[in-house]
Image (cartoon, rainbow, N blue to C red; front, side):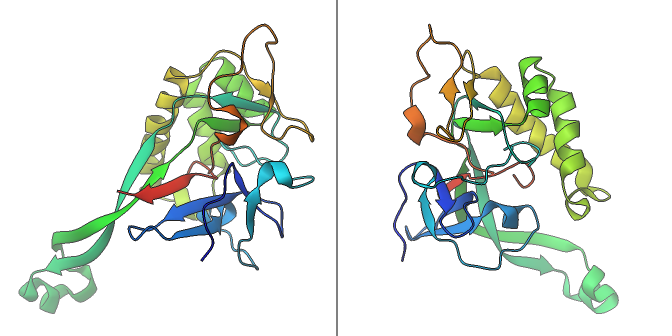
Length: 221
């Protein structure tokens, strides 16, 4: 079993961002953030702090574009996810409708709590929307960049609502200034030299979205 990684986890093999999962038992596992966006990975995650990897392959934490330019710091936020263990249907309804039977009751068990982290990397396009506080423009940009299977049909309103809930907190709690991402400083060099970087240092970082984005950390409820 791989233990927790200090700092922002990336994969040593492909140098891309990882998502941290902590089961209710306390076991820590890692998945590539691209898997959360519907893509596949051809190798297991081999986690290491991003600051230890040369030429990390970074992406915008909002729209997933390559080569993010800026990092923003905001309050951490958590999303609680329960695991569905059973869906109860009426026996008569099942006999008549089979797979189309209406669910009468859903049983769940505590699952994971996703911690989005404090640092968000943004490409120039998303950074412009963040700086102008255009939350609906950012939501539209991110939704348009998502795989079609995640936003098809009635999924789109749900995805937009989830993005609005997440990004509203980001906008409401943004720290002053922003950090310029460079090859030597993947977590950002703070733009305003006369203002101290927000508390948390370079070890506090955001991860990725079901919609939205990426290297998020998850912990038991």
